[in-house]
Length: 195
Image 1 (cartoon, one colour):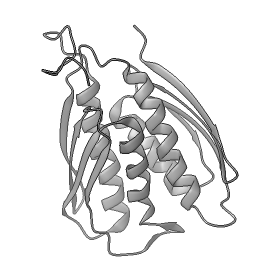
Image 2 (tube, rainbow, N blue to C red; image 1 turned 180 degrees about the vertical axis):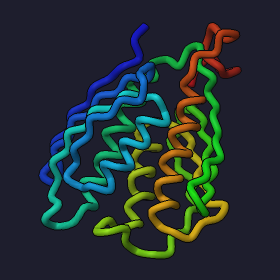
Image 3 (cartoon, rainbow, N blue to C red; image 1 turned 135 degrees about the horizontal axis):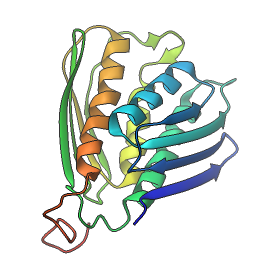
Image 4 (cartoon, rainbow, N blue to C red; image 1 turned 45 degrees about the vertical axis):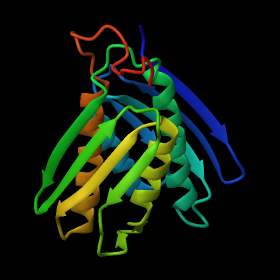
């Protein structure tokens, strides 16, 4: 069974094509037009071991909001499709990831109920030209569309770059664990029989 998906979505604000392979090696081929965001998506792929290809054209002449938010939406849709029926997965994953002074906790449940629980205060409003509030917007779209419950919490940190990068890496490590095959489970890991 291949756990791959490709989703294309075009609106008046963005034109996005994303493909994922849950059983990859963490390879990333990403072009969003937003340099720091590309860096974060590459970290997400590398640490989740999900192969990710993303081609994004957005109205960055306005700002980066639509590009980042819509990428989260489309990536979430691709992940949800790649999850399939979730038969044989671990379902839950968690990680505590440090990056210098920053420490972020992430927990994932492939629940089918897409919701983000965000407690990641970021002091500085910008990392370079990237609006730090867009990190949350990305994860809102990702969690909702992927149908995952995602908790992200800053334990400690000061540097906005470190905080956001640790958040992406923690989410990636938790996702990696949740989508891994569990050799002891043949069916869907739920008493309801579906997720």
